[in-house]
Image (tube, rainbow, N blue to C red):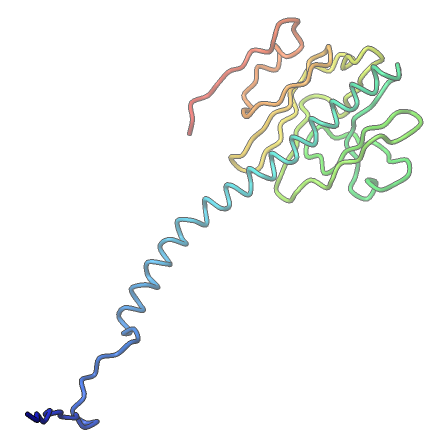
Length: 196
C-alpha cells in the first residue's frame, strides 16, 4: 500500500508573524524596572562608600596612635601625632599645624625622625580632634593629659577614636561620647542616641 503524504507549504505571504525579538512595550517595561532598581541602589552604594572611607581613615588613625604609644614606651621617648598640611606630608621634616578640626593628613614623629605618615584623608571626610591639635605620648605610653575623642565622619558615617590620658585607645561607632569621662580612671562613659 502506498500512501501519499499531503504536505502543504505556506507561501511567504501567509506565514505567521511570530517573532523571536522583543516588542517596544516589553523593552520599555524592562528599562523602567531597571531604572527603579538603580534609583534604590545608588543611595545605598553612596552610604557604603562613605562608611568605607570613614572606617579606613579611623582605623589608620587608631593604628598610628597605637604605633606612637608603643614606640614611646619601647624607646622611652616622647612621640607626637599631629596634623600636617597636605603639601608637608612627604617632606623630610614635616611641620605640625595648629588645627584641631578638619585634619587632611597627619604624621607620627619623634624629635629625630618621622615614624609614620598618613594617607591623604579622602574627600568629604572630616576629622575633629576636640580641644587639642597634637597628641603627645610620653615615655610611659600616656597621652600627656590628652583625654579626648577624635571624631572621623562623612555625612552619617561616623567613627570615634577615644584617647584616655593614660594612653588607652579605643575605636567606637558613635560620636556622642561624654568627653569629660574619657580622662577618668574608670572606662569611658558613653551617651548613646537613638538610631535615626
